[in-house]
Picture (tube, rainbow, N blue to C red):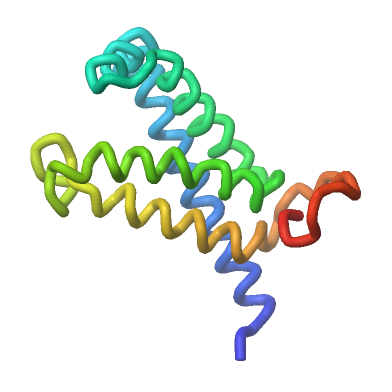
Length: 140
């Protein structure tokens, strides 16, 4: 049997870890690679440059929402396609992320943890905003 209090704190720990890692990756794209550099990288892969802005927004905004515990289920679900894209981009580089160009195990793991977060919900110490009645109960 699952201890509800322990599960709530487990969801909190997962949420904070995911949020911090996402914000860090978004900040890396902004402050280290720079936004123009990230755009150029995405375009070198054959993606439209606008995707770089969307990924940065998803990582920084989504990470911040997870850190605060705001709309955790929808945010985690919205971030899954970003991580699937990262997994597919790294798929040809092999399994380990230490491989040249980075392998696919880290983004694949991240994808699964976002699924788990979406299933668990926000957990303890989350900001609970009023949710419109049109939002399904499972997404709250």
